[in-house]
Amino acid sequence: MLAPALDTLRLTLHVLAATVWVGGQIVMMGMVGPSRTLGPGATKALARAFARMAWPAYAVLVVTGFWNVSTFHWSAQSGAWKAVLIAKVIVVAAAGLGFLLHARSTSRVGLAVWGSLGGVASIAALVMGVLLAG
Ligand code: HEM
Image (cartoon, helix red, strand yellow):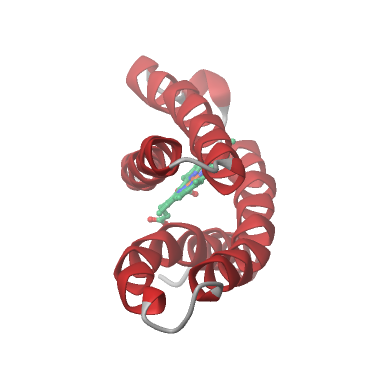
């Protein structure tokens, strides 16, 4: 049986935004090195261009994430499902914070630490999403 139209829209938006937020960070890892050869401002310009796409994607993830939650009956969900959902909300907040601090960081250590936190937390959120979808 096919998914109803509204569920298709909700999950398509959620997964599409995840591809931009998570996939974009992975692609950026591969772009940073080559961008350094294009001039002193190239890496910063690339990072800013990605941030302009990533933040709207993050907002779509949060809005459609709560929309996802609203489609489940809380009392019918297992303790494990609820625990994963609560962990996911924390991990999503950590992903946003890591990305924000990474963007504001001026030191190499700061960029590496906050970038890694944002990236690992984003992938953890993705895995938890797959677990929640069942
Ligand atoms: C970095 C942010 C996020 C990422 C990368 C992400 C990723 C995903 C992915 C890949 C799925 C699986 C979709 C599927 O297989 O159909 C999913 C499902 C889900 N996500 Fe997220 N998500 C994020 C944020 C959120 C937030 C903030 C919430 C809740 C407040 C949330 C709640 C859910 C729920 C409940 C499902 C299951 C949906 C269903 O089966 O109908 N997500 N997420």
